[in-house]
Structures are given as C-alpha cells and as structure tokens.
Image (tube, rainbow, N blue to C red; front, side, top):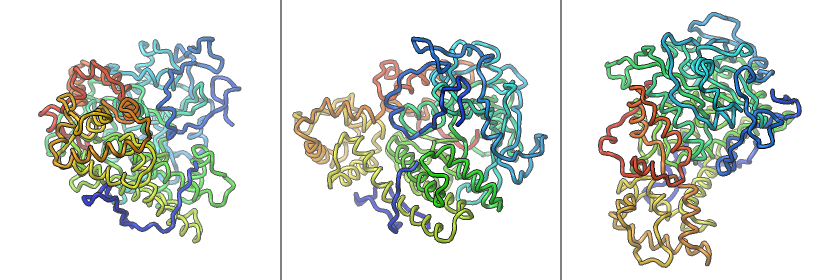
Length: 599
C-alpha cells in the first residue's frame, strides 16, 4: 500500500493516511587492517552524529603513529588495498571476462578495468580531508603523476580486482530489470589506520557490462556537482558517500542535457568516490526477482554480518531485524534531507543505499524559496521525486526491500515484516518534529509544537521565504527582552520577506512564549548558539555550482576549490563567502538554472 505523507498540511496538522498497525521500530543496527596486525577493523556507522560535530583532524598512516600523530603514507608504493578483498572473495563473479554489454545471471559482480582517457587529464580538486583522514595519504602525493593516473582510471594497483556491480531497480515506479554499474568501477577496499573499511569507486571510467545504451562516461558538469555535494552533505551532518578527487579530460562526450534534441559535446570527467558499501535496495531486488534465492541469502547475510553488527547471525528472525534497522536508518536520512531542504531528484531503488547513505548524486537540489513541490529534476515530468514526496518514496522503496526479502521469510515472518514497515509513519513524524524543534532552538516537546512548525512553514510557502536563511536568521533575531514585535533590519533579508505575511508578527509572539518554556535561563545568545549548530548559512545552491562549472569548463578550477573549502564549514560565518553572495538573496538569473538526469 502506498503511504502518502504530507510533511505539514494546510490545516496546520501533520497527517498520515496509512494506518499504523501496531508497528514498532527498534534501533538495531576478524580481519586486520593492512597497517598493523594489532589494529582491529572497525565498522563505520554513517549515522553516528558525533562524527559530524566533533571533527578533529585525524592523521596517522599506521597504527604506530609518530608522537605528534601525523604519520601519513607518503607514496602509493607504500599504500595498498586491504589484503583481504571481501567483495571479490565472497561472491561468485561473472565468468565472462570480456567487457561488453550483456545480461549477467547468477553473479553479484563482473571484473571490469577502467577505460583510460585518450587525452591528458587535469586535477580539478582534491578533498584533503578524505585524503588524510580516510585514506591515510600525505597531501604531497597529489602532485605525483601516479596519483593523477590512479584517480582518473588511467592505471590501477596491481593487487586490486576492479569490479562493476550488478543490480536492478524500480525506476519512477516501474521495474527496470538489470541495471548495474554502467559507468562506475570499484577499484578495491581499503582499511585505514582507524580500522575503517572503505570501498573506492571511480564514476565515469568507461563502459561496463551494465552500460546498456550508455558510453560509460560522465561529463564535467555533473561531476563538479557530485564532487562538491558529497563533501558538503558530510559537513552538513547528513549520511552520505564521500569524494576524494575530480579530474577532467578533453575526451569528447556527447550529451543531450535536457533531452530536447540538442546534444552538445562536453568533456569527460571522473570522480573518485568512497563509501563503506555501495550496495543498494536494487542489489537484493535483482536476485529476488530473478529467483536467485541462494545468492540472495548469501548477499543479505553478507550485508548483515559486515554492516549491521548488532544483529545476531544465528537469530532466525535476523532478516526482520535487518529490515527494522534499514527502516530506522532510512527515516534518519530522510528527516535529515527534509530538515536541510535537500531534494535528491532520482530516488529509484537502484539509487537508494542499503546503508541509508545519500548516494548517486544526479539532478539534486536545495530549496531556495520554500516550495514543498520543488522538483530538482527537469526530467521528472510528473514530480514523483519532489521535495515533499520524499518521505512517501522512501516508504515505497522500503516496501520494495520488504518484497525482495520475501523469499527468505516464512509466512509468519512476512506478516511481521508488513507490521514492522507500518511503524515507519510514526517514527518519521516523531523524528521530523524533533529535527524542527532543534532548528527553532526548542527543548522538550510541547503540545503546541506541531502547530508552531506547521504555521511557520505555511507562511514560508506563501511568501516564498528562503528556507535556509529563514531558519538561520530566526536564530539571529533578538527576542528575549526585545521590543514586541522585534525589529527586523535589512541584514535579515529572509525574515523581511517572511514579515510580509500578516500572521508573522503573531507567530513571533507565540514563538517568544514557547521559548520561555525552555527555562528561566533562556537567552538569545544561548538560542543563537544552539540554532547555529543545526541551521547552516551556506549550502550548495544550483547557481553556485553553475558558476563553478562554467569556470571549470575554461580550466579555471578556483571556484570549485573555494566552494569545497567554504562548504566544509557550512555553519560558520565566513566573510569571503558572504562577499561572494553565498548567504544573500539568489541572483535573478539563478532562477533559470536547470538540472536533469543527463550526466
């Protein structure tokens, strides 16, 4: 049954049309790393909020770091993938070794080498944080020829087995059969000095057996966006894949950007991206749909064992526990999207991570003026993946996961799976309200909170007030002991727009009264400190990315690099970013910037 969730309806009430059938959600959740046999491998929890709020710069190229903790691997001659490559060693590989487009049965991966570019490549940008904190590499390695060749797919490490993953998916509500990594190759798995296992993947590295009618390439335009937003989302505190590097070539790649019959030549580019795992719901769907049940069980058990360590592998209900854990983490991800004003754009099940990471950035977008029906993808004619429908689509995708697990469940367990999924609605509502209380600097739950949030969003919608800056500036607005109504000066441009609504002064009075329930020690300074930690000042707006793209197409990579730095501190006031207009009203021309699935 399709769940219809409207985040906040016009009657100022949160409503859910799907009934809750008593569903309850619970948080569920020996190899040595290649540095030293005494370093134990650790499971990465991408939903651990502390890693976003306590981002101390970690270095250390081995378990026995120097006294100052800054030992990093100086060259690729010393840097190696993990001795045990779990993906290549755990599953049957496609026996066909030639690289051509085909249907691949009874396999999870095909061995595929990246296709080198024919023209020289240039390094556009590197995430120094990923380089040092995840890959234990000294920043000086980026100046070497081998680094450039490695991150562009022009060479690979001799001990690696490059893989393209086979998966399927429901695209725009219909089953699309075999899809797979059509232009991505996983180079290998690396276990770092913290014991974290990461999968390194090139996107745009050439054809694979899963390319269908594509050329296996990615263009600079879309690659700039994916590179920047991967790192930006991490620093916003949203579960996401990461990006190490972006390179560009002069290899011609033809794209019809808006599917209007006007293709043009663009430049081929490659992003090296990382994730604890690239498995997605479609990874299980293809096996379940094709009746490959033994392989379905093998892959599901692998995922549980390696990414959900709190689940007992001997538990006969482990698949129900797995479904519960994925639902819980998915709610966490979707609420974080909604609270930050992010729209993914293509929430197909083949783009939906089994670890509830934000993956496969395509025609995404952040809200400018608050418009719940915002559709970031011009290719989405029906608005299936609009901002406001994302909770619905997440439910739909989780239901497809439940169906994919069906062959592993007995009749009673299948009934329980439906009950478990029905708990999604209430959990989403609770977490959504918690997130927006945080955005408003509110403490404990009060009965009027839903009304407060609903009215605010309704006013923002009717005035088209900027989503990001409205919440940011509300935190800056003096309320305790200030005039009633408070003075809104020109620097608070988003609030000035919101103040055109006749109900806003009354809402501010209610908001002031609600803040007083936080306690006698409530101050403007304390509220500002709290809200600045959850309401960013800088997000990757489409127009900012577009400016960087246009410069990069002329081999000026300065704005890509500066945005990377600015977006690594989205909650901090940055004078240079303010001077560039990144916290100002969007330029008039920016309203015409469009993005599509073409990449």
